[in-house]
Amino acid sequence: MDATDIVLRDLADEHLALAALIAGLSEPQWRTKTPADGWDIADSVSHLYFFDIRSALAMTDAADFAADTQEMMKSFATGGDPSVAFGRSVSGAELASEWKKYSAALVAAGRNADRTQRVPWYGPSMSVASFLTARLMETWAHSVDVSDALSLPPTSSMRLKHIAHIGVLARANSYRANQREVPEANIFVSLQAPDGSQWEWGNADAPESVRGSALDFCLLVTQRRHVQDTQLVAQGALATEWLGIAQAFAGPAGAGRQPLS
Image (cartoon, rainbow, N blue to C red; front, top):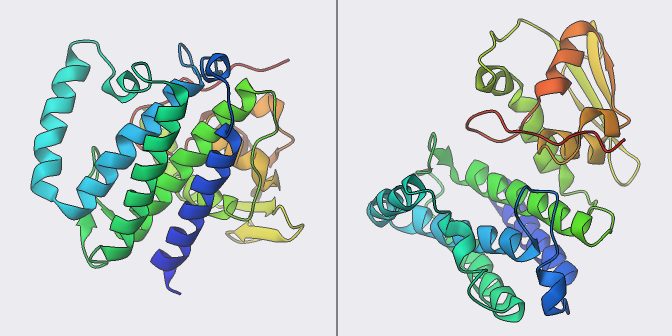
């Protein structure tokens, strides 16, 4: 399997993990508030449903995606959030069924995509593999919100390596998103995988480092946990600064989460 095949497999598995998490939820449970400001579980799944549809469109018809983007931006400009509208208009069971259908369509579009193309999105275009990896990250991040709402632990699997890799590569973007100069720094990252093995990036002899569990690192870079609520250990001033602003996603700086304690 090439890189795209691997991420397609793992994206499908991430969909299955979220489907298991929401299976059998009662209607009141669907309306349980998550840590995301103003959102409940249905909003989180509706958001994924909305952008999974547009992700498949981006890979299959760039012109239609561009037209849809213009209409979507008009809705956002009026203060609305079209990504949660569907989930607020249907039952949780119907939302789950529709999300499963369109998340599967996204995976199918990825399998059939021209792997030499750049996929358009709301920021820079991406390779097919990178685009699908971003969808995996988004799915997992919102599944954490659902888990938190249900007082369950976040899903932890070897699929976290995709998210951790994005988080490491996005270090420079974390500075740019916060209007800070990107420092010249050689930071070694060593994370314990869910199976007990080590995932490493950079030179082990680097003067600065970040060490800890892959789960904690992924929770941090998707801004689902404040750094104080992780057991990540930063050595060096720049490593410490990075963990304070880290984000794996593109776009402006996220609000992050307040410390739990």
